[in-house]
Length: 447
Image (cartoon, rainbow, N blue to C red; front, side, top):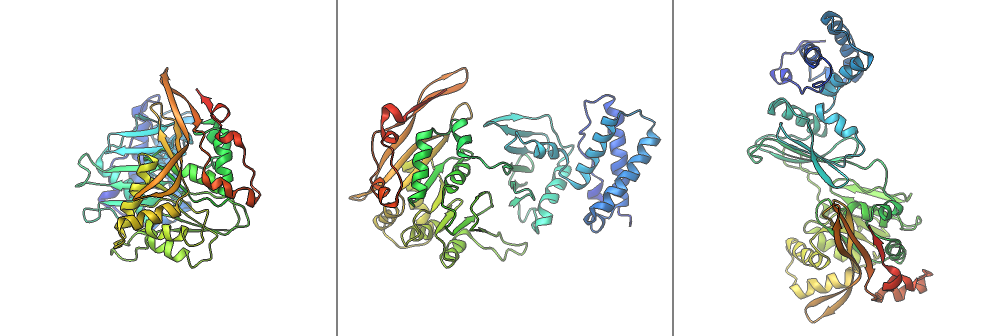
């Protein structure tokens, strides 16, 4: 192997062995192995041959451990080797966090602060990077294989790890406290309706109602704030779509996991290093209309594609689904109005609202509660227009009754209103259970 003394490859690495027996001696072994590796490997060529790098790691690791004369248990020896591989071929100190299935998000705020989210709650870890340069080296490892770059001329980037996890990176001078990484981990196990009920997101009456809506080709918008479970809920609803329909999914970063066989997945493309080649969500929505879809699922509308989504829903693609950021079901409609205007249309506001009222049938709004749990707090029907106002009516609500021992108590309660579109269900052979809309039976207390 050709030697390479590139300065960037000689940065100190995190100390994953700190706190173990004789931590200083183990750290010294780790540092010696990495220094020798980085001096012997050419990062521009050798790193592409994983088997060759692993063989070199084993050779150097054996030599350094033998020369150090530090007695190591089998567990310590195996962990040291794993740490070296993580720092050379993986994501350094982030590796154990990425492997931990209980963690849903990883948040790096500069090289001295790393938070994780478990069960909806953020906690700070004891993981640290030794320097900002080391953190930047890990960032380069994330974006380089994707043909992306992060530097002062391009200080923000969205990317996706090989396992599907979504990554956002922002660096100085925009990030004043140092480079920041936000990783939304890709769920290895797809959430089911039973999982949503078990976690208290909704109750059985609500899931039965949403299943009937999916079968009846009701257009649904799932709304909520960041991290409230919009994509998870959308995924569960979309899996109720019959298997004989052609589904086209459109996402910024692919997260949906549909079980149907006839699914076409489209993903937007960011601009390349030269700032060219971008394919937006809006372009994909327009293209999807030429692909003979039975249903279109847009992972999230954020801009002008909202207009194209409305037109798709109003031109025969019933049963389409999407998500939107908002603070309430009503606010979701206001947000869509704003996004349609972002498309550069000259449509008057009333015409936009008429399009929204005709396209959307149901708004499912989620919120993250004080105890970290995610719940559907509102399911509302879009009933039409009265004057210049889009009329909505709540069908289900979550009514919080208190906070006991840090846990939110409350119940899901139907309002007693039977949505107008339910009249279409019997003609399609979809049974309607009156108990869904009966307050005495439909509500279920969640503790």
